[in-house]
Length: 491
Image 1 (cartoon, rainbow, N blue to C red):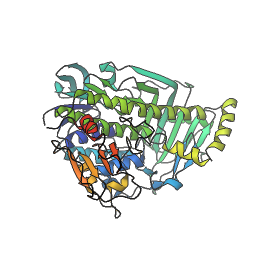
Image 2: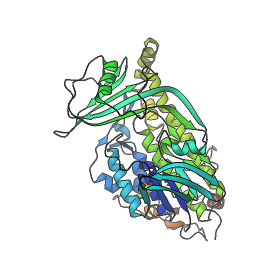
Image 3: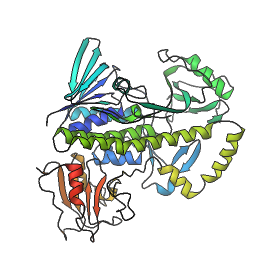
Image 4: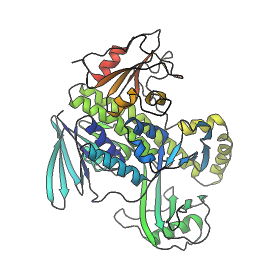
């Protein structure tokens, strides 16, 4: 395959996108302005759907080797949601983000991605032939040309600004600090205060650092300029404003400031330039929704770029990235903004919080809040019809990816190679559906019927989503249009 995609940003989203492109044979160059990889944890929650995605790529075992704890709770505006009844499908893995980034970088490099640290995108131009990026380094400037460019460079995305993406801002500004310190004296209540949110997380390891977390809303305090380094005095002042107490803090190991408003781009694509992750949908960091949503952006976009670069699919396939992922990003932004509203202190909000405290005890409400962001169903052709198969547009069931012993199936093998898979679930009675002329991009496999999966056949895209589903009565109706839409014309 020919073609190059330039990615700006070597965070989890950019690194995973690079590996997805390399899996499909596309050259991937990652530009990262920071000269060193992130050595500290900003977030640490991996959702079950992301673990499923990593399992489909055969890379989750590396993260599980460290035995990250399964967290049976999820918070919503400081209310704890109970995951225990749904732990088979819904859980949170407590995993420091730097470990996830280390794994993703090693995976991308192993597949042949070109990761350039200390290389900053300073300008870009695009035309019918591709995108040219001006890059600045300590050793001199240069230009880099790619067929497409993806900005995975965070909430203050340079790519987003240079390419002219329209951005909507909403909700109050937040201003937060993270501080990993040797010690903090006394006992501290974690939760809501009149001045904002505050928590101290003690290390479970003897001698490990304690983490101080502050969060202030509603423009109560103007944060320092972005180019001003975070100081211990800033952490002390924020703690005092929130809690009314002055902390006594030991040696500081790491400081981090995060501040912004909720931001959404109006379209995830501008010609040959795309945005993903926080560059596309930025919201306050609650429960890991930003990280996990961004990783699924990468999974959705990678195989589509490869298909178009290979000539297997028309350019219009790339428009489905915006159609499918923007509603998901918007939902994550609404979900976090609603929490910010509930966290706002004041008499009127206190009444609302009292009501909400009763609502979250209802099982249906509890489950809805757990799955609002993580349960995704794409608007595949016909998915919204009353008689649509319930799997159409949904992630492929895990029972088809792993057998009863937890071993990968032929479906998993196809997904790990970045290919789609056409699945016969009749045990060969009907014979595997045929998709001639798509060798190398689409596998056909035959499995015995699987308990809980009411389907005779499925077409699964490389990102693990079901693009066609049939029962024994419907046969292969609708298969050819689905093959054409997602896998192009037969060779």
